[in-house]
Amino acid sequence: MKKIQILGTGCAKCKTLYENAKKAVEETGVEAEIEKVEDIKDIMKFNILMTPGLVVDGEVKAAGRVLSPEDIRKLLVS
Image 1 (cartoon, rainbow, N blue to C red):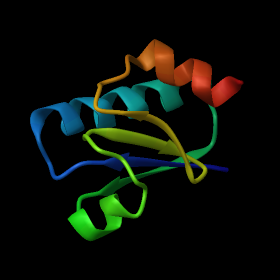
Image 2 (spheres, rainbow, N blue to C red):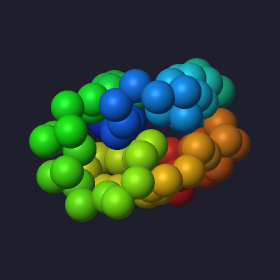
Image 3 (cartoon, one colour):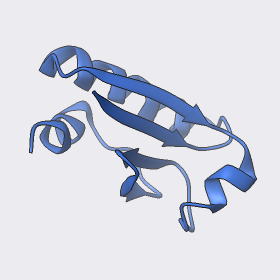
């Protein structure tokens, strides 16, 4: 099972990225747990300079931008 983390304090972009991740998981059928990481101390552990951030299995895949469901699907199946 993949672990997807959305890094952000709850802004509109963070919420959009979360929804896009949910949609990508549904469309691919990949088993995944999606977690929101909203505590700034926890976000800082990932060394990103801007939110939102997308982390898959502990690896930062994107920061400072909202990926589309299609972009996230490509990350999940690669």
